[in-house]
Every structure is written in C-alpha cells, then in structure tokens.
Image (cartoon, rainbow, N blue to C red; front, top):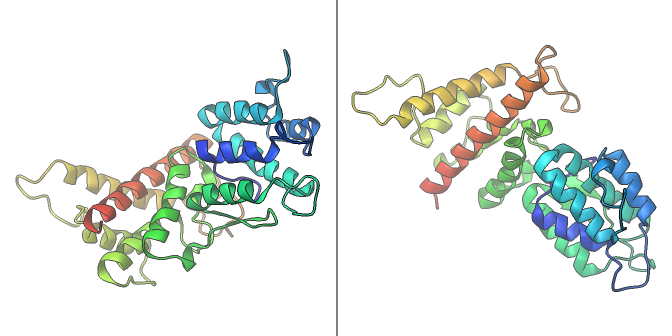
Length: 276
C-alpha cells in the first residue's frame, strides 16, 4: 500500500517507530525521514528545514499534524513511506539492532485496523478484506472508509477488498443486518432503495405524505444524489485507476467522494440506531 489512513492515534504510534531518544541510535536516520518527506512533497513544513533541529519523533509528528489538517493525501503517503522505511531498516525484525519493539508494533497495528489496514508483524500492509467481515466488525471497517471519503480522498470511493464501491457495500451491509440477506444481483438503485426502506428512510418512489417530517425531503435528495454519483463511476475500471468517468473534473470527483462519505455515514448511523 502506498497510502494509509492517518489520525492522531496513528501519528503517535508512527512517531514511536522512529523515536530513539531513550535508546542507542537506530535507523531510519534523519536523512531517511527527509527522503520520505520529499517523496510525499511535505519538505516545506519540515521543522528541520531551517532553525534548530528537532528529534526524529517530534519532526515526524510536526509534519503529520500539519498535513492531516491541510493535505491529508500527502499525510497518508508519508505515513506509508515511514512504515516502509522502518521495515527496510529491519525495524520489524526481532534480531535487528533497529528493532522498534513488539509493543510499538502492536500499538500501531491496533491503531490501523479500525481504519481498514492490516499491519503484519513483518511490517507488511494490506487492506482489510471487507468480504471476510460481518456485523459490528464490518460496520467498524466501513466507517474507516467513510472517514476518508468525507475528506475527499479519492480511493475511498472504492471499498478495498470487495467488488463493491463504498455506498454499495454499506447498502448491502444494512440489508444483511436488518433483513438477514441481501439480493446480490440487484442493481445499485434497487439495492440502495431497499437499504433506505430497511432504515425507514424516504425514497423518490414513496409519494410525499401530508405532514411528513422535513427530513424525508432530504432523504429523497440523498438517494437521488447517490444514484447520480453511481452513474459517474467508471464501470470499465479495474479498481486500479481513477474510478470516475474520464471527463469528470477533479473538483467534481472530490465533491462526489465527500457525498459518498456523508451518505454512507448517515446510513451507518441509522443502522446503529435501529440495531444498537
């Protein structure tokens, strides 16, 4: 994986991988970290660029804390690069002088898993296979993708490890949880419509009733928005390229991903309300 999700807990755990303040010096070195900063195009916010140098852990925390607020995609690229750098130095190998410690590895693994990433004991990274999860575990993994989608991160439009995109995966999960099974051959509008009905959310097929809550109008609009976004998907894609039709502008794609996150989050919240 060339990018991984980043949050405050993950930043703290990553910093522990490079922190050698209380130990003999170990790699990755400052120059290794600088290489990853340049690779992620975050060198301009490096505190060691000018002024008094700071330690490796503080250096990494400073850059990542800035990046998650300003350029999240670059933060994700840097985080994955740091793990790869630690791995290449032997940081995940018990017999190596650069071994970061079992506790540090376990803490990072625990921080990444709710965000949909499996960290192996050898430092390998792979997405959680959503098809292998169910119930609360699947809800938790889907929320990891939802959080990234709400930030406009394009690859969150695809639920990694499954043939479904995020909204389709959430809709199928909702129906499975509330009705016991879902129609695997249904097209997207039908699947989403059934999920909305299961969640007692209004769809355009339901004629507005006198005195109904104003949220029903919003829910119908969200259904239409979801279907329009689905029509913008590149149905010929393999999952490795840009998931949108070729003439979609970057700003439009970003907005579409953010809508995916918002609609998916509302569906998961309503699922949790109905099935606490």
